[in-house]
Length: 504
Image (cartoon, rainbow, N blue to C red; front, top):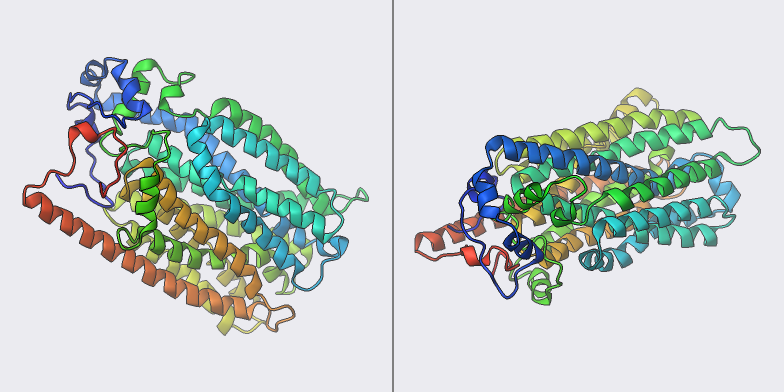
């Protein structure tokens, strides 16, 4: 049978109980070696639907809380600058002109430089230890930021913060592929990605609380200290409790459960557990004539993150421009995080429930944001209720980002190719966030109008790029179906663990 793009077929049970022997290939990955050391066919033959359901619940109980809290902390920590900005940060650091925009963007310069190297390094080192250590280090960077007193010091620390946070989302996407089938991945991505909104809420609450301290130390410094301490402690938890792969999950899975965890995804996630970097897969992913997914993902996510870069840095200041005080702006901004969380969870659930509808859901989630942006342009500044309603309509666009991040995992084979396609996505993520803050014109009246116009243009372009991606997937599926009908065998049992790409 021809392999298909964006397949939502629920065939993992049949694959796991097929009883087929695992083929041995010169390029087989560590999963194949593990399965050859256990009687996986006997284990699978005795497994029932409830066995697999119980296994997934067990994976969820261990993995999702670790991923959710880590992602929430990542959101809180990268947004600390925005939460601190409504206090005396600019005055204390002596910021002038575009220096605040530079501080916002420097995080993503660090992200841009470090994201692909750290993604490749995650193949070479134990992921749990790798991620845990990075969390501890960036927590230390936050603590150091509380002691800065000028633009240069904060600039260096923002760059380093982005460098260490850059590995989180790419490695989480790869972790999804290690433990979950294609059908399961999009909703799990939605679960941990919804922590983006949860983190925004918690960060706002911390900022609001720190704003009431009267210790002689600026409130924004306390925000950095509290966030840094929490992050360091959580990094230690992740270091010890996040497993590298199903084969190394003996702390919470039995030998039989580990075998089933690998066996159930072998038909859907070829090569996902391979620890070798395949440079031929890099070349395939980089060639838009051979596979245009990378460039389309880049353009889509770039447009998406121009919105995030602008509003993420200036969201609190936007509300403040409506006439509210610093503390009022911080408090009013908190519900926006709740809406973000609900939007991502709903979008992930909807994409999971509707077959082959991921891109349609992504486009639909752009509509509320478009309306919210339009309200900022057409409403008079006296209509504060309408302007706030528009602000609360902004968050759903983030759902499109996380659905797009799941696409390489379900539409490409080969560990290194998936990592490379994901890097295209994160290149767009970094460049979009770098560009967003610089669309703000200092002293513009009404405030941030130019940003809202640029964001509307990006919403429209993003919808176009998503439509082109959908057309490519449909045409590629039709081509493969035609080849399969002509008798071409595209998925051989002996290639299950050979870490081949979908093109191969």
